[in-house]
Length: 80
Image (cartoon, rainbow, N blue to C red):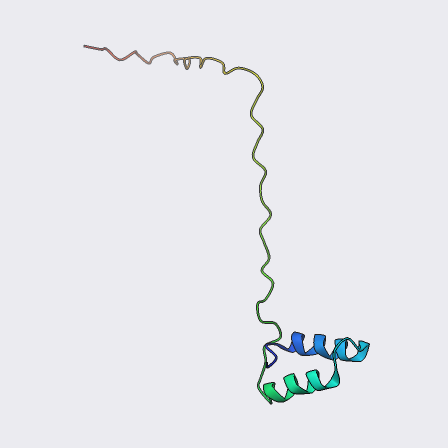
């Protein structure tokens, strides 16, 4: 199975040095990959936006809305 990225190739080389994989395995993967131009990473890390926390609801009961104060010179609309 060929390597999919440069990062994966580096990881396998590190495992080879530690002795966690055999040299044959590394060479097989390296041979299958060949001279292919590999991306640095297969899926670049996506930065997530900071989430906003929802405001906590008030513990007080809802108050009645007060009517807006009328300015002098304004009249009330006539209802018919």
